[in-house]
Image (cartoon, rainbow over all chains, first blue to last red; front, side, top):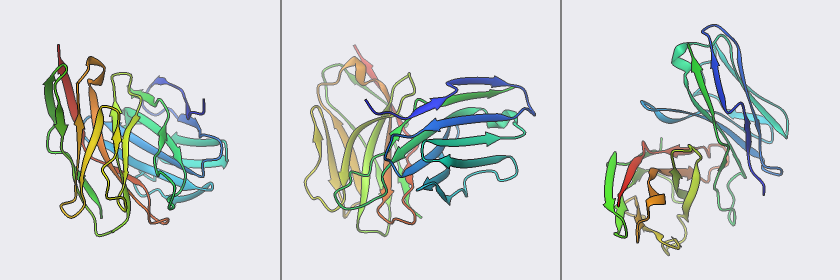
Length: 117
Length: 116
């Protein structure tokens, strides 16, 4: 049963520490998204990739966040240094690019809950 | 830019009854995808139903159906015979078919309570 795998599921860290979240997209999917979910802002897009190339990272605070896809089976989201306002659930999702005959849906991982003290 | 609006932050329905969740969106595009995702307390995002804008027929998945009104830019979700397991946060979502800008845009969500 193909699924998106995210690690860690939960992470508690102290302000100033580096945090790395990892995502294994579903094999064959060419588009990978990172979303952040908070009570106040809902689901916000941070960045997304197609065929490992970044398409849009405008939602990401550039001074502390970075997102990469070192290979087709791994996407990473790094926060350095972390701040309390980064506390949220971070979702990775994968899918195919839009085309006629493609259902267009994204498949989500279980999310990484980050708490920065 | 596209936007998705869910005007009902919370709703309640009696078990076995029918409930409709509202969603409107704004776009200048003619072809796109629309989705309803469910997020139970486990926080997993689960696809409930999808609709492609070029298809006029409303999508149906078992007890879940949509009322897609393209001209009105409305995409409501109807849940029939509500069950306790339907209690969750429901997100309406839009995805462009523009290959250069096809991110999914989510509404703020509607929390659905099922009353036994």
